[in-house]
Length: 72
Image 1: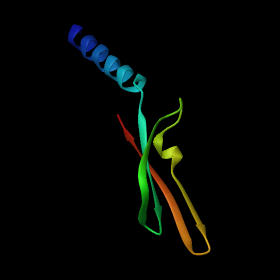
Image 2 (image 1 turned 30 degrees about the vertical axis):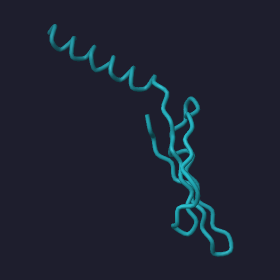
Image 3 (image 1 turned 90 degrees about the horizontal axis):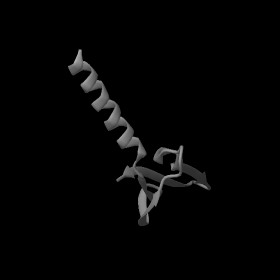
Image 4 (image 1 turned 180 degrees about the vertical axis):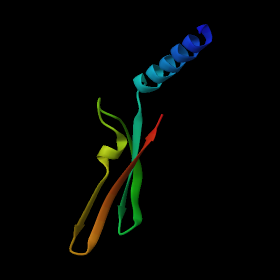
């Protein structure tokens, strides 16, 4: 029983530490599938995920996309 409690406590500590650290997003912009410019890196606002910053817009046959991924 003690081993189970220790394993559960360790798992909870790891989960708490991994969610409390500052995460950063790296976003890249594409126009018609071609990378435009350099990647932008910024810290994520509380309660948001990197994928919340993804976007896609099509205007006059041109598609502009922003794709973000998590970095640490």
